[in-house]
Image 1 (spheres, rainbow, N blue to C red):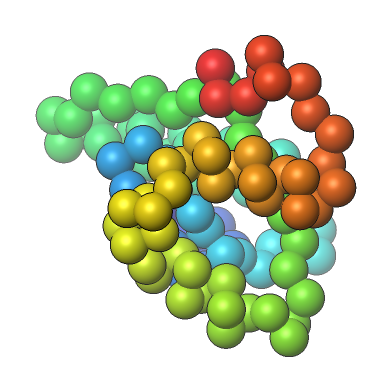
Image 2: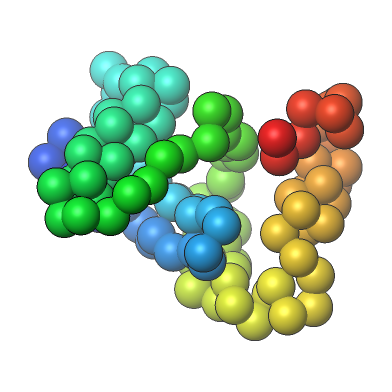
Length: 113
């Protein structure tokens, strides 16, 4: 993912995840909308995986949150420690908690498929 991002002038600060999700902390080029960056990363990573014999497909949607510069360190640490986080709380529970903490309204029937 980081290599694909670099090839498309997207700066990756941190990237990691688990078997069912990925987190990417990135800095977008000023001319690139977030949706284009996500499309680029998903399409090119799917192609790369397919070329290497891995049957994979992304979920339809994605979530994105902005991060203030003062929080970069804690977000990087969070991304690096996904396995430990999900021993305490699964991804779905953590994602809903993050939505609530961020004040994002959501309909549970549209969360995670």
